[in-house]
Amino acid sequence: MKWNKVLPPASISLFVKGILTFEDNAPIPETILPFYADGYPGLMYHETPGGMSVQPQNKQMPSAYLYGQTIHPVDIHLKGTYRIIVFQLYPFVLNSLFDVDPQLLNNDCYNLGQHDHWLQFERRLSNQDIPGQINIMQEFISGLVSNKKKEPDAEVGKAIELILDRKAQISVKEICETLFLTPRTLERRFLKAVGLPAKDFIQITRFQQSLEQLAGKQFTRLTDIVYANGFADQSHFIRVFKAFTGKTPKGFLYF
Image (cartoon, rainbow, N blue to C red):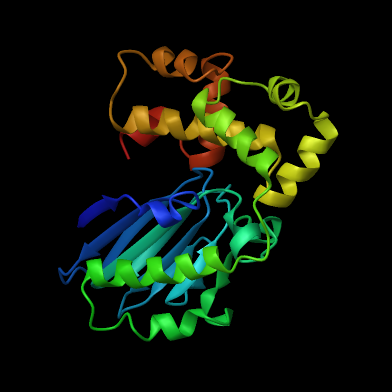
């Protein structure tokens, strides 16, 4: 499998975190890609002649869809050759650009074929190489940005920025004190914009950081990861890791 990460152009960089591509032209009967919580929804387009399904839901996926917060682990099953392009979106984008309630897309997806403007862009994607397809998808996002009916919630954006800048080493109380918001107000606005409470987004961010460190073997002892990411102790880390992956950290390493 070949994969690549592309930075979005400045015109959409406030809405798109990154662009990921995956491609394999080898005649492999089936490829399974695990998918874990990372705090970011996304827009996925794929060309998979044999079909793409998501397990354990056993759901056949359309050629293009939005997905929300992935709280429970899923596996993407690909039959034969495939090409996948993923636009990682910032957490507030589903509500702001697509006018979709993000809570409804937690562990779920939205068929982009239902979107008024998407199909005219999708028709242009065939017979294009990956850079050409990325350009067309960027054009689609740029149109949404230019014509958006809702501005992103600025205070939620600041809260997310605080969480990421502090590498999730921050509490909801500290966020509220910094932004002069009550916990109830932050909870309501964060849920509406992101689909999750702020405390859950913090937890997911901690998990994702630890997952990257574990996968990259960036540690000497497991406790290095535990305390670097603000977990109370090793048992707490193992519980959180298993909730998001279905595996213990040790099981993940040998998976």
